[in-house]
Image (tube, rainbow, N blue to C red; front, side, top):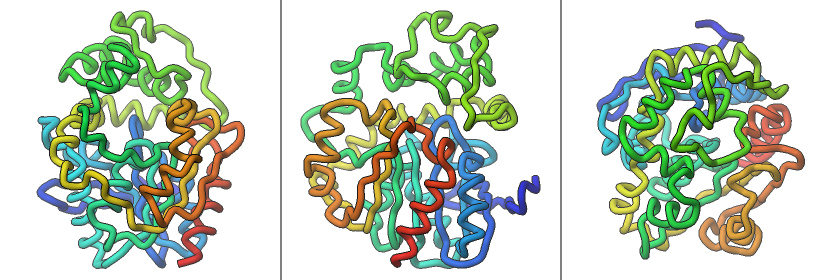
Length: 316
């Protein structure tokens, strides 16, 4: 597919075939997408940053789009995903890259910088703040206690259950609901969440063409790959005990929308603005709270995000 000069190719990384989209010449920026997204979520960043003198590279992460999707959730730990990215950086013939992450891509970017800071020049991370490992309780136990069984991360845990519900709703409506929802809850009675004939009005930043692209790819691949990231939460916790208390030693700019559900709770705001994030990420240079913006900030305000990225990476 040729879209505004964006090139596509397959590379072999860490034992899987990975699809990447890229454009431009210059220092490499690696863009890491979230759920339920693909490389496509970065298309305006790819075009914008390529025109600013960078080589923009956006993979479909493991389990997504045209990249291989191992069946077991045990193959989706942050160690696996970071391993894929280190192999991708190696395939580009580079020692270091700039990194931009959003949503799950932000979580992976934090992990990449925690495990292999030597491979990252600087990071612009969006929407999801660094989460230090809590040695006292597994993530799903804490989430279930705090939010209950209809919280989306808990609903995603049991293999096959959410997939069956998503088939009932249909890929197009699932994509629309997940990209536009103002609630983190998914009822156990899926009919209360999104009947197949529900009309969903798209916001200005999301076109039907965008929805169609995602729906086609998730219709072909299914949602299991993306859901497996959530199913690996407790396994990540078990495997990363050695990094308890470790700091992210990479220069960082963190950007979040003021209306983002993941930001709008007292503990998160206190952590971000009260010194906790700076303590865990000592090279944090700036926190930007974008007014009037929700979770999908790179889609909602692409030009502003592109400027934040180019301004920050221009320092290095």
